[in-house]
Every structure is written in structure tokens, then in C-alpha cells.
Length: 362
Ligand SMILES: Nc1nc2c(ncn2[C@@H]2O[C@H](COP(=O)(O)OP(=O)(O)O)[C@@H](O)[C@H]2O)c(=O)[nH]1
Ligand SMILES: [Mg+2]
Image (cartoon, rainbow, N blue to C red; front, side, top):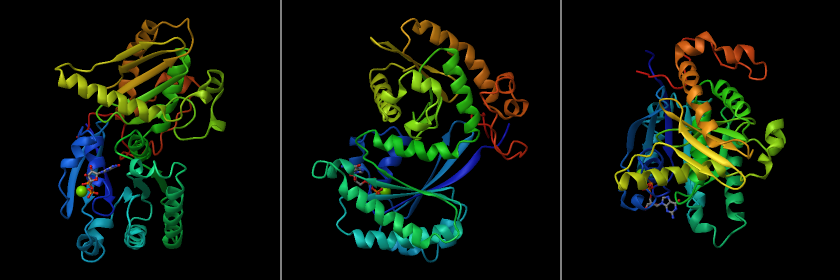
């Protein structure tokens, strides 16, 4: 058995911006309403979250009161900012002290760029639900984003880690979009997973195959063009099946809906196991795939029955389980070898530290 890969994820930003709320909604099954009961975080609260069996996120939820932040930037600088994989920095869009917020952000990002130059930075401008009514065009968000990017450009120097900015609210699916984007970059062998999903989609004559993590329901990967890419990168099948016309927010909406549905099932003493639905113009099935994942297959071909989709998933389970562990990745499967359209892309394949993506771990 392999040891799980541990990634240090810093969660920072002013007190009250929503850090602990996000963490609780995504990883601890809180509803947005439950977060009103959360107390202020004192100093640094560390927690370990297992993701896909083989990836452990060490979340450092850093209390945002000024005295703590001063301490992070002085005595604790080395401890906090070394070996960071990702910094998630949360702003409150309704903050009335933007200049002070930016000053603190500059201090934090300078320390990060110095001690962990490769760390990715996700800036989440949160509580958008409170701002959207007065500013539907999101002018304020664009301004805030501009300020954040220019601070980063100023302090970045030779650091290679990139910065991305997302508008979020714990009250809607935007939170899932932002966190999926974070997680997506931390999963090993994402190219391999994507090529298998694409193959699976084509085998089922389907429009789309999407993989979700079973606990958080964050989207991990999808068939065809990469998550977050623009419509010009769509592959032939996506163009043919009309993926351009689909809602670009569909993945995070499904995450949020399924998680809510699963909570409802729990409340009435039922266990959520799978989902299937037939509409006028499409058929959708959502089934467990490996130990820690679900697969969603969407068909827009009226000839395809949902039973055929579940039957194919059933047969694919063995295969996905096989290449989800370290040994399976090493052997390379016949699908990857035989199918030139599904390139075998496993970064650092010979490196014993590279993890399989859904191994038993520990
Ligand atoms: N309206 C709204 N309230 C939020 C949002 N995120 C967090 N909150 C609320 O803000 C308060 C502070 O959140 P908390 O997570 O403790 O902030 P932290 O100090 O950054 O950890 C809580 O009452 C949350 O319910 C959001 O996106 N929209
Ligand atoms: Mg907190």
C-alpha cells in the first residue's frame, strides 16, 4: 500500500470573510445556513481531509484577526509559508476596508512567493450574493480582481505559481466551481482520467462523461476538452452533440444539487446510491464508479436506453478500479496502449512518489 500524498493548503483572509464556512460546506456537509453558528477561528486550525483515497489535504484555516496575521508574517513566517501547495485567499466583497485588506494580502502573498514560489494562489471574492442585487454587472468584482492581480504582479518576482480569481458565495454553486478548480490541479494522473472518460463517452455514444468525488461531490474531470477551457477547445464529439449550448455552470450545479439531495435522503433515513433520469431530449445516469468516485453520463441520442449506460458503467468499474491504484498505473492498461486517441499521460511515471489517483492509501 502506498502512503497518501499530503498537500498543504492555506486558507487565509480577514476574519469574517467566510473561510471556515466554505471549508465546512465543502468538506463537512454543512448547509450554508449552518455556518451562521460558526465561532471565530482562533489562530490556526489544522484539519486533514482525505480526497480520493490517495490525496490528503492538510487544511490550515488561519484566523484572520489582525494580531494573528501580524504573527504569521513575523515569528511564524517560516512554519506557515513553507511547503505550501495552494493558498486560498478569501476576501469579503462587502468589506469597507479594502485598502487595509489589500495591505494584508500583499504581506501574505509576498511571504508565500518567497517561501513557496511554486504554490498556486486562488483568490475567492466571497459573499457575492450580498453584492449582486446592487451591482448585477459585477463592476465591483472586476475592480477588486484588478487590484488583486496587480499586487501579485508587483510582488511575484521569479515565482512560478499562478494566481486565479473567482467570485463566490456559500449560498450557490459558485463555491463548488472555485473549489473544484483548486482540487483539479492537485489530482495526480488527471490526463489519464480524462482520456478514459473521453473513451467511455464515445463508447456509449454519449454527449458527456463526468467524474465526481464521492464525499464532496466536487467535479474531478470530464470527457473531451479540459474543465474550464473555452468553447473553441471543444473536441469533435462535443461540437456534434451540442455541448456548446449546454450551461457552462452545469458541473457545479450538479455538485450542489446532488449534495443537497443526499442530505435530504439522510434526513429521512435513506442512503443515496445512484440517480437516473430521462427527459425529452436527453438521458442522464449517475452511478458509483470507483471506491471514491461517481460517474455521470449524459446521452442526447434518443436510441440509447439508460440501462445500456448503466450496463457499460458496470463493466467499466473493474477497469477504472484497476488503473486507479499504483500498480495499475504502472502496468498501463490495454485501452491506453491501443487507443492513440487516448494518450497515456502520467506525469513523473517512473517516480515512486507519484501517486495513483484513487488508491487505498496509508
Ligand atoms: N451572505 C453570505 N454570508 C456568508 C458567506 N460566507 C460566509 N458567510 C457568513 O459570514 C460569517 C463569517 O463566516 P466565517 O466562515 O466564520 O468567516 P471566517 O472568519 O473567514 O472563518 C458567517 O456568519 C457566515 O454564515 C457568503 O458567501 N454569503
Ligand atoms: Mg474562521
